[in-house]
Image (cartoon, rainbow, N blue to C red; front, side):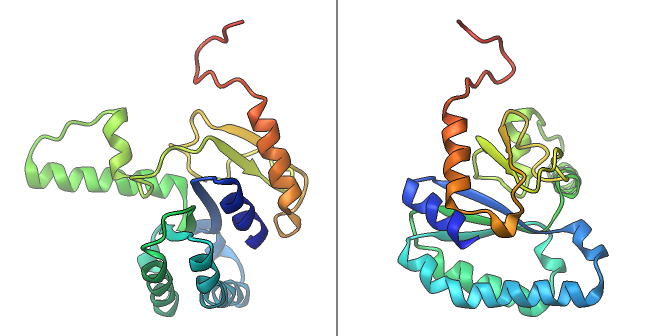
Length: 198
């Protein structure tokens, strides 16, 4: 993770969103979940000063309120300590699921409807109800482990994202893999559902 973050920061990539813990991960054995939460807390405590050195701002998306209180506390602390940074915005998807995000957005819309009366709903403003409001849709989705599926990640946002798949497992994903993904991305013609010209 550190290699990917540092490489993106050096390349001037403005946004990086990483899938860190999905809603589906709660199905794992309790000991494994406890270890993952412990690793997350350790990362936050050890890396926050490094994020500040590299001018990286931390954010999170997902059902954060369902995470253990100690994890929520460490997240809030790291987010607050990096709030003033103006470089790469690193977003961790924690207790995240794309379908849950859409459901939660619809709930917020319904609450606003009940509170304010009729609310205009269209593709342009629906994004304001998602966890990722304020973030642009991803240009590139990198899928490790050779998996040819989205795995319930950013389902609304990746409608026109380019997808790059590598057989490399995430723990082995290094800067050279990221560079290759970006080089391949730069060679593609983005059509956003339209016909290519030429």
